[in-house]
Figure 1 (spheres, rainbow, N blue to C red):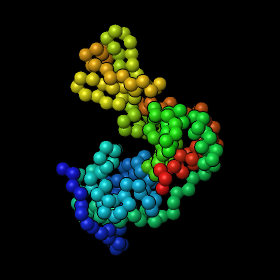
Figure 2: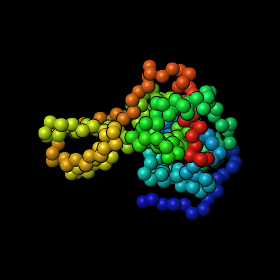
Figure 3: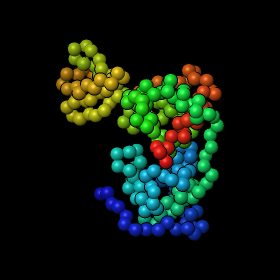
Length: 237
């Protein structure tokens, strides 16, 4: 059952903040790290896109974000939820993370290397995730991993499937949907196939990213500039 809290207040006493830090390490640190170095949303920000109010922050901690990779915190008490919220807000009061590099040069690199598949603010391709607010969601270290080792940092919903048809042909691309009777694949050229499973011979759902690795294909300085640009994308914040 999905429940929304109605009212509440973040505690501000030192004991609650310390307890919130401990609970955060149990429930949240696996994905968010120290707040700015995990593979989930960067929390070292005074403005969290999905949590503009303290009540909405508590609700996300307790219930997650439907349709995203942020799960509900099963077994977490309301009291601990508010204490975690207090600790998260304290992260937002920390000095914002700074990254080296030139975002202007990084934007040019993005246009040349990434815009064919990724969209930013309505411009670009659709074969990869929209990156308009990626800087608010991912840390610089995770962005680097995603560029150099995309299979180590998979974005939910963007894994690749290879379908071998009974007639000997194959279809490969991002798996958009699948049920008992059919699987929907989008090829790199944007063409979408809704495939009847009765006509398939094999479906390989190996958990691989549709993004190619840039390991050995991008210079350190260019990579630094690209990460600087990506981290600056905040979705209009």
